[in-house]
Image (cartoon, rainbow, N blue to C red):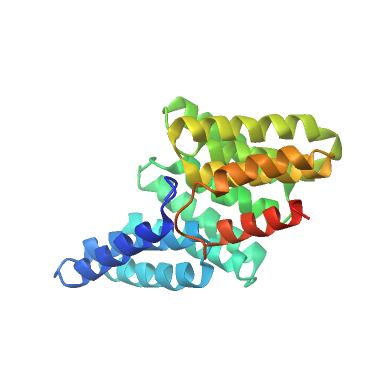
Length: 244
């Protein structure tokens, strides 16, 4: 997904679920369903993510798949918050999912799951909780050399710093630029788009609209698909605003 082809990702995700449904292998179905919910989450399609996570949870509970059950809880809690179905309840469920995930002994992608929790704290305006979660995620990513979510972690750090205090503008801008640099090195176009939108809003608000428009135009024009996803629609709206 982060490579910048959200439509292809969705097509492959749905194909994987269809293939798993044709097999007498419940574990494959739970795994494929979870990754499809992850694709929906990345595309910003919260209702589809919620429903898919519920299916994964049902399948996992039936067969005792503790790993997929824990991850489904994280996805379900995220979707609840996005859909306005209960902010605190969603955060509680995400924390339960993270606790259960750690209990399985798994650790891969933990920084990314923590980024979702930090984003939830941002929406709840729990800035200290969000920043603490991001610091933990970055420490784990550095310890285990797990660089995949670093751009998003730095972007969220900048957003939370800005929301916490207006005096954090310089530090937030550094976080956004660092996120863009990391995303560029990884060819992670979707992360680059998100980080550039964050930077563009900051540049707009500090009187640098031309730079904001130029940077956002460059990354937006790279995309060839996914224009109905939340990120690209948000980027288009911001570009239209910067162009007036």
